[in-house]
Length: 281
Ligand code: SAM
Image (cartoon, rainbow, N blue to C red; front, top):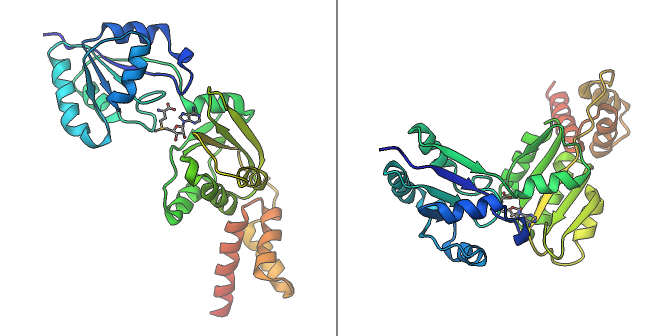
């Protein structure tokens, strides 16, 4: 028996007019629709008069449901996978199902459409030639800072998803770990209150600190300044400033960060390390 096809179908991220003709057609043709939240997707499907059997496929039932969906595909049925919004598999369930289908040579057909990360990037005004989409930062501060240190030196624009109630904490950590950069918070994309909050890290923090941030947000961060080839290595600058003996470690780190083109937190950590070394020699 020929296996059915697994369609990965993008749906709107707010504005229903962003549904594609092809998505509507294929959703109306498949044997089964696997949705992250069936009640949520039912509204979308009703809007487009699509009446097809629905099954749930979300983070916590992926293993059991994935096997059932694969079985349907093996039996020649066609299945469409959709998520609550945007492109399935992008910070949404789907990757494991696609991986398993590919492993069994089951045809996988993408049906592209909205994706919040790409929508935000396109209108951000930040460089688009190289960018990193890093999904949701961890919710715990310690892990989040480690995560941000890991992406600090990557070239190009950084694109993150974040929950609105964690936005300010994450922006504060961005300032701490990545320093002042050009930051954009893209809010409620394609919806009535769509907004782009642009500025330096501190300006954006000030702008979002006035009230409660509502709705969905994407955070975009401009590439960091690449230290010019001829800039003095951080350790040399720190040693020179420390030898002066007049500045506090904090001020030394501040000046060294500017001269060496690194973040203040990196300069501070290195300054502490050198200070400790000096004490032990
Ligand atoms: N698969 C989706 C996509 O393709 O964009 C992303 C799903 S992820 C669970 C949800 C996150 O996407 C939100 O927390 C937010 O960061 C971002 N997002 C989704 N819709 C958005 C919108 N209309 N405006 C801004 N951000 C949005």
